[in-house]
Image 1 (cartoon, rainbow, N blue to C red):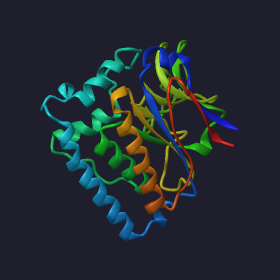
Image 2: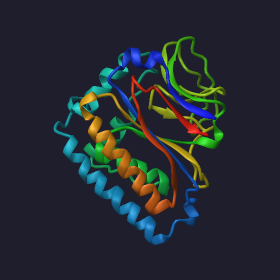
Image 3: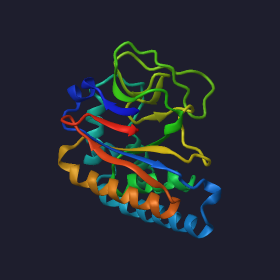
Image 4: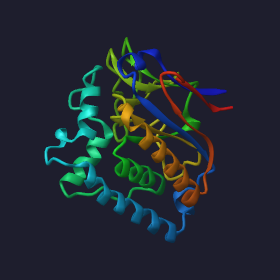
Length: 242
C-alpha cells in the first residue's frame, strides 16, 4: 500500500489549503491517441488559453488575485531565488499573448484544466515512486533532485516545501519544478495527478476542476480513474495504491 500524505508542517503554514488527488491507470500512450482526439485536446487547450483571460484583471501579473495568493504562500517557506508557482508561469504567457502550446496529450489536458480554473496542476509517473508520496517542509534540506532538462543534482534547501518520497524530492518549491525521475512521458500509462488550492474560498472550483479533469482523462486517454478525492487539514492522507 502507498499513501499520499500532507504532513503537519504543510498545514502549519497553509491551513486553508486543499489538494485534489487523482490516480489514473491504463492511459493511452501518446502514439495510441487518435489524430481526431489529439485535435480535440488541442482545441480544449486553445479554449482554456482564451478562458484564462477572465482571471487576469491587471496587466501586472502579481496584482491578479489568483497569482497574488500564491505569491503570499511562497513567502511562507524557503524557496530558490526566482521560484514561482506553476500557474503564474502559465498565466504570464497568456498575459503576454504567448498562449500555452501543445506538448503531449496528458500534459495538454492538465494544462487546460490549470488555465481554465487558474489552479496549479501537475502529474507524475506513479510507478516511479519509492514508498509513500509526501508534501511537507524539508527541515534539513538536501533531498536529491534532478530537474527536468538538467544534468546536475539540485537538492532541496533547508526549510523548503516540496513533494518527496523515500528516494528524494519529486517537485521542488511546492509546485515550481518537476524532476526527471518521476516525470510523465509520452509512454506513461499510470499517473498521479494533483490540483492545488491555497484559497479556502475556491474549494468549490477545486471540486469542479477535479471532476472535469477526470472526465477528460477518461474520454480522451481511456484512463481508469482508480482514486479521486481532496486532501484537507482534517483529512491529510489518502491511499493511492492498494
